[in-house]
Length: 413
Image 1 (spheres, rainbow, N blue to C red):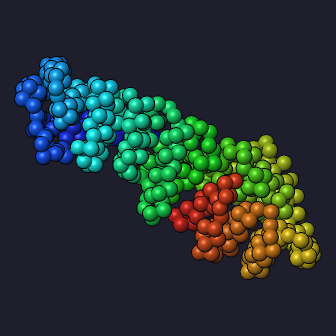
Image 2 (image 1 turned 90 degrees about the vertical axis):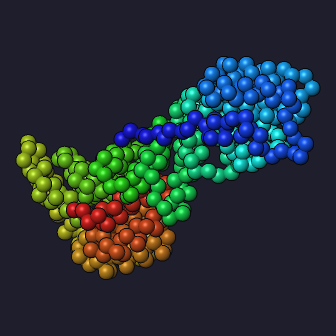
Image 3 (image 1 turned 45 degrees about the horizontal axis):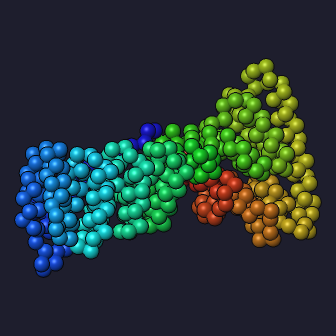
């Protein structure tokens, strides 16, 4: 989906549509009054500006500036008028120089300073001078304070000059602030963040952004991006490989016989053979397995896994006893999951919870597997509660979020 960039006005009314009368409405002292020798050329500049004759207007301002013996107030109004003409004519450098002088004056109110700082950055942005726009927007935020619109255009200014790292950094802050305020981030804001993360090869960040997109804007494209990110994420730990296949299966994304076979073999290697057998069964039900030249090999694998399941059933009591004596709770997680797959859900879930309490290598992967076990047991409310506790940056949190999406959408297969 293409990113949409908002348009900025060329400048605000005070500075872009400045007339001589409005230039005199700053913070004035009691003795402030334009000198007659300055007032006349400025009036001419005002008339030329109204007629959009910018060259003539600027010549009149230069004439006013050339007057000798000018007061500080004369110079102040001259710079205001110079800046307004430059703003309307698109002369970014001249406008910035003039407004900087006006902004620095104690005669200028905070509101006027905010307007002029925005006008500086806005005009640079409109002129596609994005480096100058970045400087202007950052200056506004530093001197005036937070402003959501300004921050968004700062992101765009970075992005349009291909500084994806800084664009993503600020966009991420905006998204996090929105979520912290219990609000839904705009779809385009999330797309911007995901795009920046893609450009800087932040795979984990990109996946999380697409989780948010699929959460708040559940479109097939976002699910496709998520699944692609899962498959191509080489940094995922081996302990999550089976989880990736399971999410893909639930989303209808396993379409090749090799996918089903690989997933089933990983399940056996992970010590949960019944899960592998269930995956093969779904492959046959979907018509993917048993119909090509590899059907004999597939049947042989299924028979082997079925026999492994029976062996596991026979040894599970001994496995449980050994796991209870182990120094960590990792073995209890596997034993508990096997009990769940064998239909003893309460006992299995209890052992997994006991294992987590005992201490495990990776508590977030452990919580993910506990949530999946609760999900398999039909305890979806418990599963969602558990899955929401999964944290970290190794991919477990994002897989947990995908399961929550599937559970809550009612489309889990």
